[in-house]
Image (tube, rainbow over all chains, first blue to last red; front, side):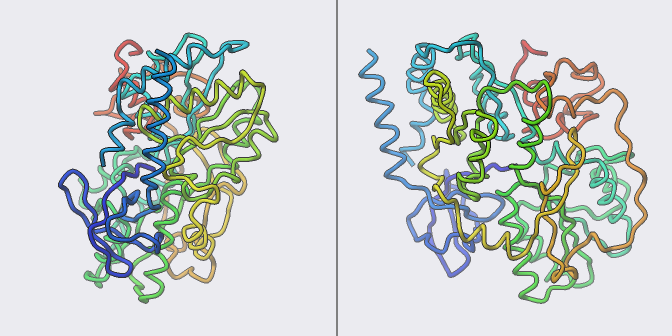
Length: 73
Length: 363
């Protein structure tokens, strides 16, 4: 029910936008994310973007896992 | 996005599992997840199998469909019988049994019940069908509440008077307080819902470590996320700490989403709310503010049957983490996803449905 998935924001027209994930496109409401801009990944739930995904942070965390592996092997 | 596949990477999962196995726990521990999305992911990726025997996971009241009380479904079914009414709902709710019937059964008997992915689409439907009275069934936690607040605000702003909401929105904190205050509840760590916290921020849950000394971590939904969250909880226990930590840093900000919070506060106010398995929990729900009463379907007069529970259904105990799904005599026999008797078997996020679909050895 609280399922929300990251989708790429292709275009923004004020409160509405188009997002894409795995080739599927859909309309999204951007009322809750005034800061979202084209090219951002947004977390989409029930037709609304809830938040902008921090891509740099996502990559940084994964890098930590890799180091974890190197330290433990 | 390439970065996201890393959160499903089996190698990363294995690395974290090895770290968990190395933590020196003083005793066996039970961690509770209170988000249906987490429940579904834990079973889908069989994370139970990757954890040491000393670390057990238990599901809590984290599926909005499952904790929706029968009387809400009964009222929606009654409203569906009224002339010119269209019931608009998220798909999860349509098969939940009411006292006599579900919305799907009401639809089969001729009621106009429509499933929408987004409440914004339901508002558009109302605008293009002025002859219909569209009633949206507003269920969910804070994650969904902010989207419904935005849609309700748009309905008010556009003066769309043939659109209303029947509201049973719930908020997490008071339900957790009720759960942890109950006698006999032994939970050693709390996996906090990532998308609720995306909206509310972290401070909402500070009371859990403060009042109950229970470690908490906000988790994402991929297997790597959940395993890292479990590792964080184990380390808090090892270090004799209890705090609210954030594993889902790529999405969850410390203060949450201020725009979402402002919209919820503008359109809704806290109210007492019945939860399946818990009864009434004070201040654990959201009601439409008085000034928007014209958009509140609770005011529509309708005869609702007295609520009854299905005999033998133990969903309430499952939701409190007191029993496992297979401890219920109906599980997998009289109650299956095809013929659900209880709400926890209906929703894909319900603990019973998750066990039924993904955990053959538990069936």
